[in-house]
Amino acid sequence: MTPLRHRVAVLGGGISGLVSALRLLQQGKHVTIFEASGELGGLGSTFEHEGHAMERFYHVMLNSDENLLPLLQELDLEDRIVWKETKMGFLHGKKLDPFNTPLDLLNFGGLSLWGRIRTAIGGAYIAKFCNDPKGLDSISVSEWLEGLFGAEVFNRLWKPLLRAKFGDLFEEVPAYWFWSRLRREKGGTKEVKGYVRGGYRLIAERLEKEIHRLGGDIRMRTPVFAIQDTPWDVQLNVSGRWEAFDAAISTLPIPVLGNIARGPLANMLPNKNLIYQGVVNAVVIMKKRLQPYYWNAIVKKDYPFQGLVETTHVVPSSQTGGRHLVYLLNYCQADSDVYNQTDGDIRFQALKALRDFNSKFQPDWVEDIKVFRTPFVEPIWPLGYQKLKPRMRVGDSRVYLATTAQCYPNVNSWNTMVGIASDTAARVKFDLDNVYNARNRAEQSLAQSH
Ligand SMILES: Cc1cc2nc3c(=O)[nH]c(=O)nc-3n(C[C@H](O)[C@H](O)[C@H](O)COP(=O)(O)OP(=O)(O)OC[C@H]3O[C@@H](n4cnc5c(N)ncnc54)[C@H](O)[C@@H]3O)c2cc1C
Image 1 (tube, rainbow, N blue to C red):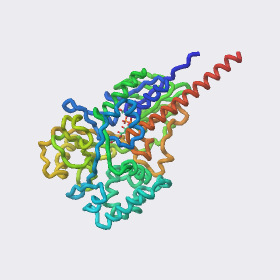
Image 2: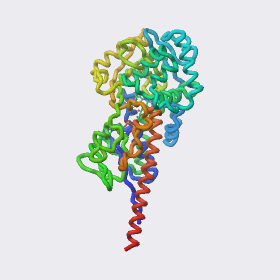
Image 3: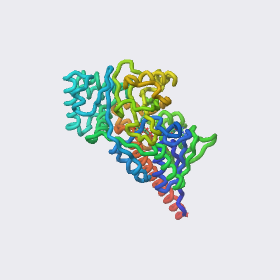
Image 4: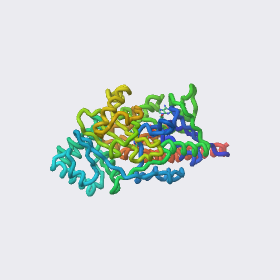
């Protein structure tokens, strides 16, 4: 009997969808990707400016990215990675201070002398003694940080940064997330970030090429409108009709999947009430460098943005035609006022805000400002999330997940999602092969008994 080639549907053509598809194809499955938009790469996708592809949201990699770097090697992109040492700045009041070395901390004007000493002691304590995250999932990050650093450092340094990332719900975020993030960012002695010449678009293009070479099917501008699980298959409603598959991997945010799930699948979905943080950012395309740091935290009253990232400290100038890219961002929920400001208002605020980073700034340094939003970046992790985290398989259905809601406690990144997508694809293969073998054995014994 010729073995069946299982058909798997992948919902979404971001990094998770592309890697899920690649791994399934490598394991002999037939795969169809359904992507709603006209571009692959999801949150890592790009826009064009004067013939140059630039990321809609800032994206770089770390030299500790244990899943992404081997993938880039596999795609023959390793030689195209450029690594740059980066620095962090801190805008507080009217001052932009570096915030990288013990000397920077000693000179940091945003804290009292005692606050600076507490920061140094707290940081050293975490680096030396907090090797075991046990228990941190059920302690709130605010309780943990205030205990370690004291009220002044917490209120003046950590609280504004946490609020910037998670809004007013930051109190509920587990310390485990913060611990994991500190370890990722400051794993080495120097902070080094990387970027592939050709950009994130090139990574997606190489994945697309490999998927096609292995016989995979990619359907662009094809949103999945509904999905249902039956005893025999999983069915997707696309382009006005239902299509059946042996299994499906969803890379969509949980609320988006919740909106399209039909029948018993809808009840099986985990964490339907997760609250997601979105982001809105202005990408300022400039003729001159604005300021010296890659990433800047902003603790300044009434400043209209929470962070400023000048990616061209890492992104090579060949990528942008010599232009400098400054991302001014606000993490916020999709129903907030900040998220729903008009593009015109955001552009106006951006032009005003840049002067705080460089008093010599002139509006004629700016070539263009683009505004991008996305409602689902990652969930605002609730306390005890380790237990709530969605599993790979939705109940006992044929629907599997490779979505950012699973990355906790790791940082939401391409690196983390490559790992999750590969694991989910392996699980789908395992389950399909077992189902297939079991069905085959049952059919054979039935045939023998007749
Ligand atoms: C501001 C910002 C900065 C970031 N910085 C970094 C960074 O520096 N480094 C890093 O590694 N990561 C970074 N990330 C995180 C990174 O973008 C994510 O981890 C990653 O892109 C998630 O990939 P994904 O494929 O899981 O989801 P997504 O990229 O969201 O892909 C989901 C895809 O599904 C499609 N889709 C949605 N609904 C449907 C439907 N009904 N039918 C079919 N398709 C559908 C969407 O169009 C999309 O293409 C950043 C993210 C943001 C927002």
